[in-house]
Image (cartoon, rainbow, N blue to C red):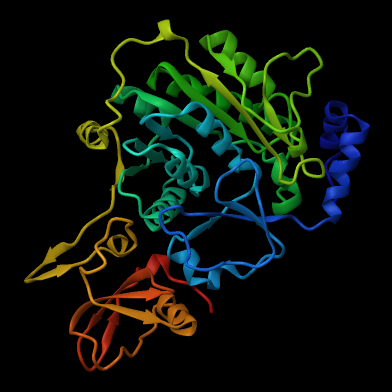
Length: 417
């Protein structure tokens, strides 16, 4: 893999010779595969063999090899989520600083890794908005959040400035800002798009995003800033800018030396920041800092986070906020019929006795997810039926007696078996 010379020169200068060599050596190694289990849908048996726990995240594991995730019905049932291990370090910060219900915003959330992690980590009674600015990516985010099945999540498609106009206040804001993506070179090969001009463009864009969302962070609230890049411009320089321009305080996150997490690459830097470098830490590239808004910098009362419905009510009242999903959609009337929502099948609060259930084999589950016709057992009641795999709901079919309609959403379907 050929790296741009400007990237080599710059990154070598900040990494130093030893770190750079270990980073380069990682390109000849297979990338680690990691998953995180949904705590509300824990499997009844061991999902994968030869797993190792990821120490900085609960219910997270490295796999020995990469299975064909697309063909695993349990992935589509929301039983687990495939996520890069470094980005799961968010769990370590949340469990250290969040001990009571909060109102939370994941600002740049697609495809949903940090949002699904945050919802699992937040205490009961918390309220959360998962947002993505790009509409296409927002639809992917919506699918992943609905499959996780938690009702106390709103999925939105807005810019940071839209939230500023809404006057909503949050206790926690995650800003995994769009970046130059240097940390993904080894896995995704996006090297052709890298150049110094784009790095500077990303740096300014990131500052604009933080400046726009800062008024939405309540006094004493936490901003968790992260990127998947290495350079100082998008990381330390932006963190310093947040401290100096916005008055934030940087907070430490508890770590273990055995995790091999790298701190700042600046020799005169005294703030706690956390950098994951392939070849040193068992992950792809990732950077994170936890910043706190000073108590005298915000007016107004924060949301009453113990009542998630209040967040829904306030968000829906803001005409400038575009809401894709207000929790879990429920059944909708259509003529004399009541059509169940696909997300209703995947909800962690769905009643197991609301619909007749039919357990599918692995082959049948894959065919269902491919939106093929299935023959249900002859004693299956007419009407809407919940189909399951390993007793985890996948979705609905409508049994008409002589045939059954597959109601799995077209835009969720497996394209190729």
